[in-house]
Amino acid sequence: MEVHTFFLILLTMLLSARVLGELAARLGAPPVIGELLAGVLLGPSLLGWVEPTPVIRLLAEIGIILLLFEVGLETDILRLIRTGVKSVIVAAAGIILPFAFGALAAIHVFDLSLITALFIGGTLTATSIGITVRVLTDLGRSQGRESNIVLGAAVIDDVVGIVLLAFLYEFSSGGGINLVNTGKVLLFILLFLILAPLAARLMAEVIKRFERVSQIPGLIPTTVVSLVLFFAWLAHAVGAPELLGGFAAGLALSQRFFFPMGVAIHTDAKFAHHMEGQMRPIVHLFTPIFFVMVGLSLNFQVIDWSSSFIWTFSGVLFVLAVAGKLLGAFLIRENLPTRFAIGLAMVPRGEVGLIFAELGRSSGIFDGEIYAAMVVVIALTTLLPPFVMKWLYRRHAGSFPEAHG
Image (cartoon, rainbow, N blue to C red; front, side):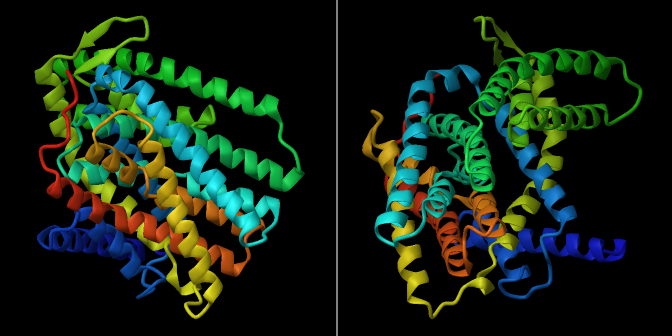
């Protein structure tokens, strides 16, 4: 790709995301819907102007990493820990139930092979943490108790999703699973989640001291972005999703950080707000690229809309995908609107589901019709929940508890 062509593509993506996001907000829809639709409009589904090239994927990856950094920065880890048991229940049920529902339906209803059924189940387990977080932020609920439960569950979901993807890939290519290798990956991820925030915290103190004496403007954005990218690389190196590195860095730099051994450390509020103010424009520049990228990846041209199999298959899987996540939320003790909100927030599959589906297609496990049906399911689970969640929060305003400090 020529450099000047890339400039034009990037300009088109950013402007269309902004315009359609603004239009969505004015029409009463979550702005993220406008950004997703910008990708659908520009991509192979409609106009075909923009393709999801490696460069665009890289910028989108930076966008989701920075978004999770911002989420970590605004998260009170004590609140997150208090919702830990509920997050684990929601995550576990939200993984097991959709996987079982999807795999069993594929085998017993549609008479598909075991490996195909496993990949279908795996695709239904995924939750797009980026879309979930953005919707809750757009609705002004990023600090609500349900958001802490969802955030914890989505982080667990992401880690398990990576392990499950490795499982399925190994099973499809070699016919077996190496439990030793899987155990090592889980151990490395656990060590990373414990040690990375501690290391980031030490680096944050260094940044704070240098910022006081530095004669060069822009120290905080440069060093903080470098820190986030380093921890994203480190997360990938141990087998975890890169976005967990961004989340860990943000958590360590947040105003109240909690060490595993029980020591709570408070960041100077003035410095924390200064850092947030310096980083926010960068985060808001990159995150729309991620959501446009998700829209670009939803290629509706591959779908034969006259196929009765695609309509039936995608309809059944969509119902099972939503039911699996909602049932997981109903296993915890909260009021009815809160449980619905948690379940709906776990529904979007987004880019994570597309990764599973693409692996199934590229490895020959999904044929054209099954892949097309999975794209329909992923599109529906990505585009519909934000609308339903906005209606739910309007309909039951005042029913949602705030997180305890």
